[in-house]
Length: 441
Image (cartoon, rainbow, N blue to C red):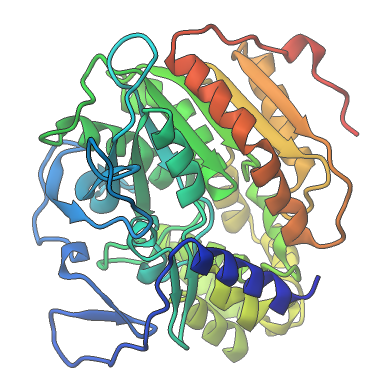
């Protein structure tokens, strides 16, 4: 399937679901407005100069229009949404404002106890502020001649809402909020943003979730890494939260392996987002980047910093990083030669800590974009630590295209993943299969 066909399918699907095709927005000279690829970012997303002290504290909230919504007898279907900004702490220990959304479902929760809450960690959306998941709820499709974004996480969110589960979704550090660049695949930033989203949802006036509500985490791809990292960090960062279960689909647990896999793939733009995120997280890496990246590489990083997934598919599919470097070596080769960069990636490794709650980890056996082997290794590592792991190898034939090999398990396994998670929210015990984990294919 060609690149154009894949993007057209995504665009057509979103349009059929009622998405809005937006005209190009004019640039503005106003100091108070931020425009990203023709999209004016609402003033809500501009963080204040000072932030509250407590992690998860609400900074502001406002009603959020769900584009895919119908009137119902008990309120809009599938629920009523609220846009959020809350305080978190980044990997450097500094306070940061994070945006997201909370959705109160119209459907009743039919399980025991109060209505549960699931924090959804979005998969890769891009690095431009207009790509954020909360904006994707309001605009499932943006197509204005300058950017293409699809809110594909809406499907999982709506499936959870249909079961009476409240949902809070994070935009992560720097995605949406306009004060910094998104620290793509930074495990600490992402984990903190996910856990603090739960705290923010509990603090929201009018939300039906309470301190007694069971909590689950859900994420695939970038979101799978974020939910996995959050499960690991919860005991130390958010000990007051008790997790009923975590779904981590196709987690990028070992970035050294993942960065090599995405280089030259149809989602090669994600390599640029990764490098941008590394440099945002650790400015001491900048001299190393400047020493190796040529003018074309530097321009690509700047260009990608405002792009969503659709933009990167059109602009950078199948690009090799050897075109971005002064000496023609790949980014992977440069990482291997630079101990400081390798040490940074080692710090991002998921699996060094132990979740204390059940985890369902799924990965497609044909996934060669976020390679199956490194995700399975995470499951094995956790099993060795005594974690209650339900491991699912999603066995599918290779479809020849890395992005399709990665995306297909998201769709084929999503129903089972949500059922597993809602069973944990209903109080049913998990059944670890660590003892019968299949051998590495």
